[in-house]
Image 1: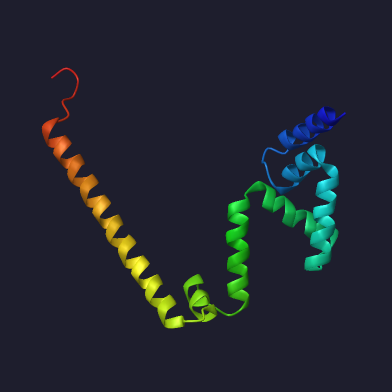
Image 2 (image 1 turned 180 degrees about the vertical axis):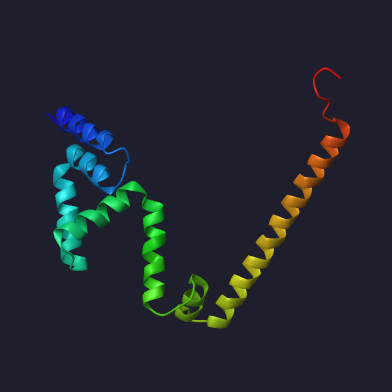
Length: 139
């Protein structure tokens, strides 16, 4: 019976041309309906959402959990009035000056790493091109 439900969910998903939250939720429901229902009920209670809002939120999570978490964090710091994640992290920190210094050090170090990688890669590509020039076929 579960196989039939899963196949039905896949058919519904394939007919939509785009795999999105509704299709992900339908597949998850077919695999484990009780857990999905518990999650939906929990979202409705915890976040004070309607059933449709909770289903959409859970479907978005199922499609791409990492992107969902990043978007949720962004919504949180924007709602609190911060311009970016760095400003929010500094404001929430017990030691704002140390946090700001760590963020600036991390940013500067990784910027230099990126520049170094691009420089080495470009130099290697230029060297390889000079040692192996392109000769069109037939010449």
